[in-house]
Amino acid sequence: MNVPRALTIAGSAARGGAGIQADLKTFQEFDVFGVSAVTAIVARHPKTEQRVFPQSLEAIEAQLVTIEEDIGMDTMKTGMLFTKEIISFVANWISQTDVKSVVVDPVMIGKMGSALLKEDAMEAMRSELLPLATIITPNMPEASYLLNNMELHTVDDLKEAAKRLRSLGPKYVLVKGGRLDGPAVDVLYDGEQFDLLEAPRIDTIHTNGAGCTYSAAIAAGLAKGQEVRDAVREAKKFITAGIRHSLTFKQGVGPLYHAAYEKYGEIDCIVTTEKSVEPVM
Ligand code: PXL
Image (cartoon, rainbow, N blue to C red; front, side, top):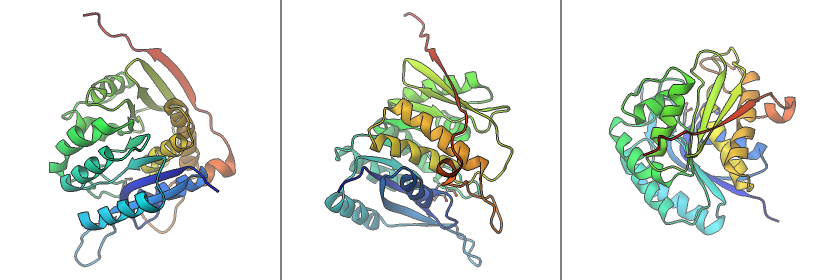
């Protein structure tokens, strides 16, 4: 028997709500077989205060070769890559595979405050990884950093950011408006059309892993053969349900609940479409 397969190359989040753990839980919810390559372990040591434990390129390569030889993949996503060396290595590996689609979540800072991308890695992300992406999924701070600190406040700003990010090479750009005032409006852009995906704002701070889960849900849809636009719409509903029913355990920002979409059903998400009007040259 066979089911669609999805690979995540990302960090391990010991708290269980984000990173590799979020990705694999999400793949499972969509009945997609998940495989993983861990780039770094995120957990805080009580004495040394160290929060990120990167893996060697050798360990990352071993995981990727094992997956390629034994399982294969229909689609893949990247999450926390941490260093420019890991980004270059992963970008080079992707360009030599025949994977059908690549979701790049340009992870930079975790909701628990850990720096998940080194400052000197931004350029490698921009020039080596983004051009290989079928879709990139930055939140507002990530979009801003990628665009040299562009100010983002309104949906129109997100649309402008999506246009500029698309000129860096990805086929689709999804700029997520989780930090807007008012409803959570995300902007999807493919060079011709903007889709605005609007979900009600849920009043909670417990959204750890929302970004990882969103991009993993998109990857799961793509693994199953969905079009990008359809995969994004379903993923938006999936994370909105997960945030609405987010979990609170002992301390810190709680994770969203990956089983919520399946368990509690659909959440309304309004999609509006606008053609992009380019100035005539
Ligand atoms: O949500 C961003 C994120 C991504 N990857 C890893 C993380 C986090 C946040 O905690 O730990 C590994």
